[in-house]
Length: 97
Image (cartoon, rainbow, N blue to C red; front, side, top):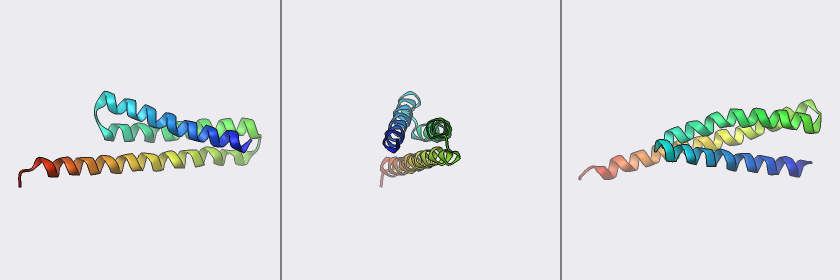
């Protein structure tokens, strides 16, 4: 059963990143993509908690959803830091020294 939940966790992380990439392509903003992944962290965390609760039938299965949300929050933080880094690089290279 734990293999199924790990595969589900990996799948939801990949899906969140793909949705974030699609939102980046539409809005042309890494900040918006980071915000999209941040919102999906809560949504997928809740879905994962409910799904694990129904599969495992144990109250501690909610922590699976919290763990999934934590990984997606870290993922969103990484995308946000990359957006800041890209913005700094664009501003530095745009200036004539």
